Image (tube, rainbow over the protein chains, first blue to last red):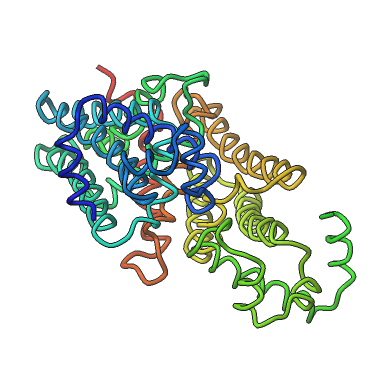
Length: 211
Length: 211
């Protein structure tokens, strides 16, 4: 019962919340290494140094852990999108900032993002629906920036949905190789990706190239 | 022992091979739905209508099924890359063709590609290494086309590795939404993606846009 779980959470202490967050982070690492289905509650208890009773004091089920991992990623991603919307600027500038923010989340949460991208089909019922709605909400932010660029004439005529999916793929897929111990920072990747995309859909470059 | 398995395979009849391929296809569907780790040999036997003995007559282990699914995808992807290399043409034309070929594989093999992109960490030892080498070989094909475009002046100066990773992400990630029953064909997606990418890295468009 996720709703009553969420209600209980609000009533808990800061210490309880911090411990719960730590359990979610540790569990994300285990799910990323071994897979969600292959990991049992017993293993989650062990890596968190908790007995089963203590574990359930913090979180209601294995699927609730999975949902919390998804929420962590979506919270961060939406916070980034909100910062971009508040910053304003041209559609090109906004798309560049969106890419910077998204890659920053992927860079900082490699395990959570791995689980997010691999295990989302394991969410069921209202948790699956909530995830679908939040994910779609973020996609709409990207589409809105693209459409704004078309409306101002900064971008050429394009299918905002399809273009957003291409943009998301280019950025999301970095989870496979963009790592905190790698040769590139999130910004090192975001910058050239923004260059490709913005030149790729820019109205000037497109007009200049037309035969 | 994959090498002796491969040797046996060559010695089998066409009928045996066809049955083995069918088992691999059916198993890909099950792995894509339920996950590799969550699926047991008993379930693979059941969906294939085979007893355990008959199953092992065709394939040596669950991991051998997984490796065969990866090989199916890589075989198709490399065949496409070979066709592109044989066709020749400008780097832009080659990149466009590579995208068409890659999306065609993703479109035709949704289950195999899902398993390929989600379950590759489950391959072990020489199977993992073989997969890594083949995947890297394909990435090098993309990098080579990009570098050729830089060398001819068709593309601007770029990091061929990073650009190839962006291109791969944009195309591979379509596995989440490019479906045989969807509104778009593989080519419907490949064309605008090629437009974005080629304008995005083209030397003409880039020069025209520089302040």
